[in-house]
Image (cartoon, rainbow, N blue to C red):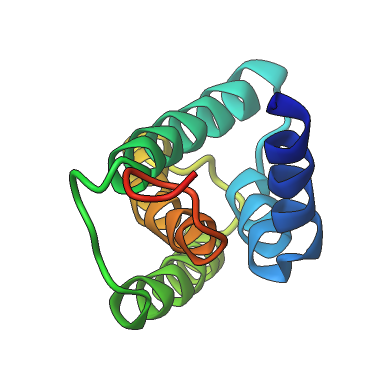
Length: 121
């Protein structure tokens, strides 16, 4: 039962250029493992939280809202990277958690399309 969902998650990340671009932008300028792990963990926590809530149909945002917000999050991180000019970004963990919340809704909409959720399989 877990294998199909794991495969779907890997495919979603692997074929979703926005995920790779966002992760690359988030980690730009981080040399240390600790800082990188903190940023990745904050994103994963935020995304997992809204993914669970949205998949269970407790909270729902339509793709027409979440998709532009995902694009805006990528743009925001890119602009922030340009403005900080090599310095490590302050508050990147909190920002990343917030963006993870938005990205979780995007993935939940993909799951709902294939019938996964409170009313699906």
